[in-house]
Length: 121
Image (cartoon, rainbow, N blue to C red; front, side, top):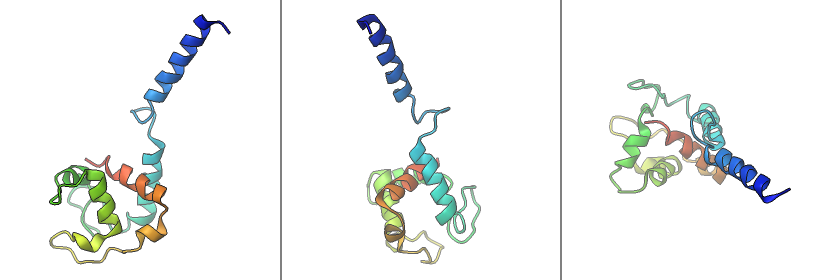
C-alpha cells in the first residue's frame, strides 16, 4: 500500500475512534452502567425528577456530585457514595442502601455504573 493510501485510512480510523462516546456512538461503558443501574439500583432509585421509590431520585445526580461538600471530583464522590453509602445519607432518607456493592460489582462494573451516573444531569 502506498503512503497516499495509508494516510487516508489512518485518518478514517482516528476519526472513528474520536467519535466514540458521542451521540450516535454511545460509550459502551455507559451502556453497561445503564444495565447495571437497572439490575442493582432502579428498584430503589428513580431517574425521574422528584420521584422517590425508596431512596432519593438520581435525576441530576451528576450535577450534584460536582458540587459535593467534600470537594471531590464528581466521579470519586459517586464511587464513594456507592461503596460507602452510610457516609453521606441524604437528609430525609434512612440509611437503607446496601453496603456490599464493592463485593457485588467488579471494579470495571463499578466504574461503568459511575460513568452512567455521570450522564445524569
